Image (tube, rainbow over all chains, first blue to last red; front, side):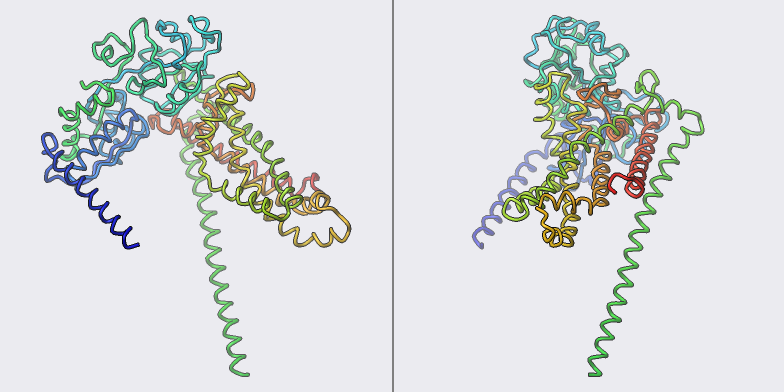
Length: 279
Length: 300
């Protein structure tokens, strides 16, 4: 009993030591501005932002334990609502704010990264290229079999995102040209759920942020242009969006420091690490 | 002698005082529950008022949900919620009767009886999200593979998952009631020469007809109100299903999906209408079943 307690204390000590060391080494460069600051930053909104926000929060909280940063999801709609009503300090959106939203809440936007939205299918699907028109016809329900676009003789299983999704907004505007989506399409509530649904179903088609495309799903070329971050950056891949942080009016000093950190060179590394492109 | 009588009267007084307190606390709890229900109803009505006063109720009561083209009908979701609940009950209710008969018939005693009960208690404790999660990875691909109709995210998948979800609650409620009935009637039934199976069919189940209704009500409440399973498994397409393999969206899933939209859009307002109709739907179901249990002829 005593021995196990002793072991526990040793383990605890070791963890603290490691934490202290990493804090010591990380507290340099862009993190210096957080010295002397304390308080809580609450963040909510777009789900595509979460990995970037989490990593930045971890680095800042390790360097300065007096700062607490809470990151929640909810989607772009929730982001606008919560920051507008003063429930959080930063509301993330995967789309530009509407004029109505800016006017109503007095919001200020900070774009920080570029993300593309890719049409995705199961990796075993032989189709690799679709024209913009074919994509529109598939999602509107005019084309219902893969055979008609050069694939297997199988029905097309449509997957789309929920009404509050920023990804859906971009895809609908830039890829579907504001065309309709068939009412029989399955609706999933996050980029992750889209990945799971498409990765499991060999006849599925859906769309997800390029940062989320990995070996489990296949990005389709749109009019011959592959959905890669490079193509999104140089403008040849058309279905792209900016990721925004929004604050109500001018941010307070701590929140401003957080936004500056995201836009700093260390922030850029975090953004790139998660498959997005810094602006 | 005297002191003993004194002690007894003091004990009685003590018990009486304690019972008054128990009564008060229970009354307070009941009053609070009633107040909460009334508060929820008035809040929903309050938020729905714009729909009624601005003659936009018609916009909500239609069969097409397509916010892009300004159609905000929630009737498909209302229909789906009813249908899904009925499917879940059609699967779960006979199973409940079966399992309860087993627990009071063949498996009256012994290790299997205890194991089955343990399993049921365990099942009630499993969070909904686990059922949904397992369904997405096991049931949905299975349905897609077996029936080759649609994506597998369907009315059927959600109905089956929901029936598993509500089954343990229903069984445990009925089982508890049957236990009491058994204590009352078992000896008499045995004296009349009934086999355990006959006892269940002709004595215990008819004696528990009120409990049967309560069982159905509880199962129904959980099935209608469940959000996560239908959100994860049903596919969420806002359409009226033509077969059990079609992707559907329930009222609860609809609320979860749309609540995050711009709070000044019509879509957002339709969420409150959905909440109100969900509330009314449950009330109607409850009222109907309770009325049926009292005045119906089925069990009498």
